[in-house]
Length: 205
Image (cartoon, rainbow, N blue to C red; front, side, top):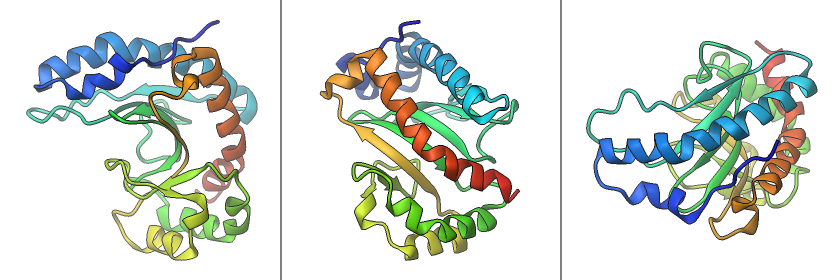
């Protein structure tokens, strides 16, 4: 099946004023693409992991005034939700697309997972040089893999609100972003490299 990539108008969604208008654009233009890409990624991950995984698309349901600054799909091994579990993401801010293995602050067993990642620090540092790390899924900030130090993982372990997201980011004008087939291929390649760390995170639970 052919997936559809993302266009400039998808990124411009986050310039639309007002919660209702922006949510309508997200639901009409972006979420159908998330479903299309997400089903393909669910099939890929289920096969690679040997167990069922589930697609979740951000609903932004708690928002009553401020429109979302980003939106995403998430894939986890839990049918009911993803925030308490290590999960995979693909999503958009207004200025980049992100592909993450995400461990966010709601995570169960966060300290144990952080300790496992600290043990795997050398392997993490061997990931491709274009990988980046975020410590807060609500912010655009990220550091390059080369800048990652053990102190960042110490903070992820010790600070309740600290997060750890690792993967790739693409600018809107990158040709891969608008080419659905090429984008899904890159997402799968990224996840393939992150699966060992996802599995380590699950094993400590």
